[in-house]
Amino acid sequence: MSEDKDLAKKLFGKIKLKNTGGYVVDIAEAISAFQNVDSVSRLFCKNCGTLREIDMGEALEISAFNDIKFSRGDRGYFESDGCEFCLKRPSAVNYEIVHLQ
Ligand SMILES: [Zn+2]
Image 1 (cartoon, protein in one colour):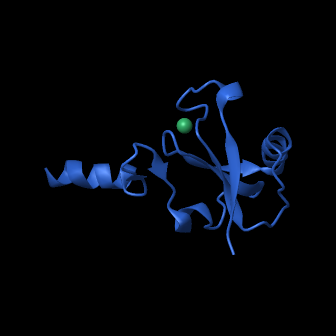
Image 2 (cartoon, helix red, strand yellow):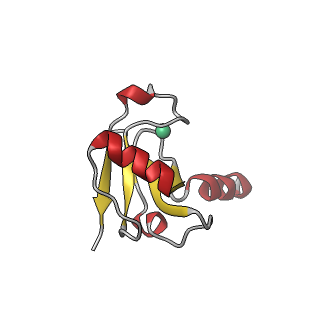
């Protein structure tokens, strides 16, 4: 029993489920040091809870198509209400950037 619980905690420990059914990001995780040297920000999907790093090209693409201001070194992360993992139609996905002080 405890092994299953440990595994579940390992897999899902960073993800918290909101009452609304959407996911909320773990802020500490969202702004932690990048694993990939090309990463400039992160993208969090509120629909499935996926948090992944994005490079400058993707950050600029998301920004351009969603009227978002983003500069390298900005302290913050992007949020979307769908992504390639939960297979929401890309054209129907809304993005926003969350700036942190
Ligand atoms: Zn998703």
